[in-house]
Length: 104
Image (cartoon, rainbow, N blue to C red):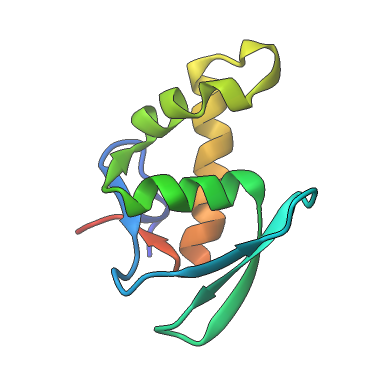
């Protein structure tokens, strides 16, 4: 895969498989576990990664849309470019785990 495929600045992100992900988040914890029944793999994710998965289960979203949606999660009102950069890194991690994808 090329870098452009891995980290698109345009296009939409989506859940990799529509089969559904099982998740468990414990109150007071900053991490959660996500189980992918299609692969049998369990992943440890942080709160923003879990929230990204929740949003993407509602449908495809562009990186710009996601950065706007999560603006309140960033202290000090991080600008759009900084939010996109951070979320791109989180999405890359989720894509490496095969939890999210960019439609062809």
